Image 1 (cartoon, rainbow, N blue to C red):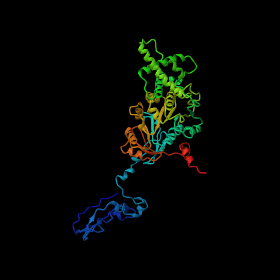
Image 2: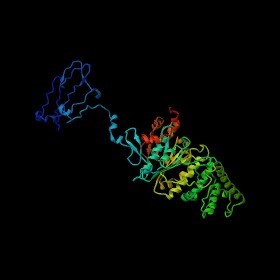
Image 3: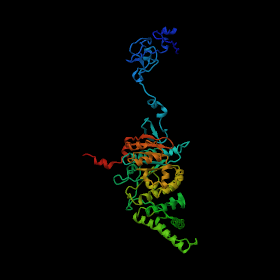
Length: 513
């Protein structure tokens, strides 16, 4: 309850009469309701002036000085009530003295700005470096939310060596999602860690063995003609896989329309032969049919020869692959290849970095997974492609693009992990897959062109390119859907640190005896 103070007009040399207090101003217990009065004298300068202000605020002559404005940083706070004792006991004012601020500084006090950038659904990713709030996100969970938060469950993780993306991928894309109901993970493990894939130790802790692929053929075998592939994607999917593998084996030489037609006709003949048999057809069984000329097409002599040559071109490319990696692709798929565990790891770390082996395993695995999941619906499956540019930057990109709709219907979230986005040709079908990925984790980028690529491709703020080049290990720029990007810090438990360690070889060099 306040009362307005009567205003009086001062004249030079005349003191303003004192303001009369209300009647309750003299009553104990009620005088605390009086209107605050200014008790802070104005600051005076040494400049010459005729009048000034004394401590009581009256207009009296103060030779040589005049009042001036003083910034709030140099003045104490005003008295909130006339009873300092009541204020000190917390009746009307905070016990601690306030500090002056600016509008710009006070923006951080707006809870709408520092609120958590995400909800609590999904899995914990880390903390927001601005507000220290928890960041929770899981692409399949966001895709299945009502209303949908994403239109694509695909995830892209980029970052240079040593930026922390591998540990982040293991923790956030594999280990933590496995705690969710009806979730599992399939990993194409590329990085060598002591003679085996870096996910090998984690896979064993989950109660199973990794599926190891060895160049000498002593490990797991993947059949290019596995029945699950045709069962899941039909003749068209099987043909796309054959053409993709042939293109990989022939140094990224795309199939012509004649070669595609020859491949389709060979597959038709193969399926007719093996439809009533108990043994699964293999890539070797396909070879004799590549080059066979149909007799009911009315082809001329020149056309028949061209058709024959087209089939032979595909056959020779596949034969070179089988001869180079005998035991890896020649024969039926190994019986222990299944999805019976929460975590399935395809260990391709011992296959050569160059050559067709790695992208071929990824391509076959992708199509095999499509067929297998048609029979085992009801699961959400995170498929992690380490060195994912093999899938979206090469001949296999068309497979991924053509299977996008089917992947979503089967509950697949493709996670592509790579060093930098500039590895993907702009004219590749996989570039479309990257642009459609609505969950992005960008770790440190060492080169300006790589940082600018990420900023432009994912519509980050203009200054994010500089931020990406200065990120510490374990920090990344995160964006999902149309939401603004967030700078997050990945946090792991002691157990997760032990399991996700990927520097055992370097650590061994620091061991002391």
